[in-house]
Image 1: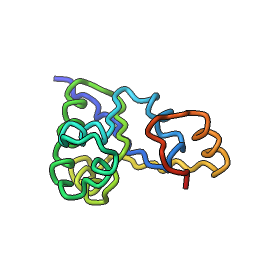
Image 2 (image 1 turned 30 degrees about the vertical axis):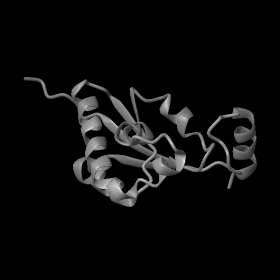
Image 3 (image 1 turned 90 degrees about the vertical axis):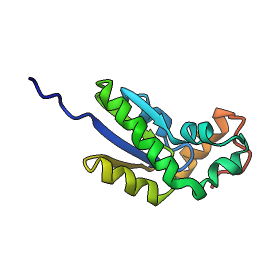
Image 4 (image 1 turned 90 degrees about the horizontal axis):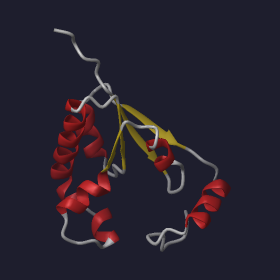
Amino acid sequence: MEQSLKPRITLVFGRICSGKGSYMKEADKRIVVSDIVKSMVSSTNRDALQNSMHFDSQIGTALINSIYIATMADKEHIVVDGIRQVSIVDRVLQAYPDAEMIWLEVPYDERKRRYENRKDAKDVEPLS
């Protein structure tokens, strides 16, 4: 029996408008943690979704399951965006120790230009 290659798993981090979404376009499978949280939380309120620390364990488990399902579907490159808690990163790295972590850094002026150009309805606070 031929052994399949392990998929490349990348955890991508960065400030708003740093290019995480563009980076994810290169992936064979994209997993956005906020989508997982939305499926677990009845609220669509942005603060409720971002302040979800009280159920990090469930988010971590759901994320690991999502990655596992993607690996079983023969996805070659899985990119995860939106992990906000160190405890979730730690859980993912325990399950997938070969996962790489990438921090995207873009100068403030470029991020500000992108922020102003994207006109995203969820952008209600100033860029930091």
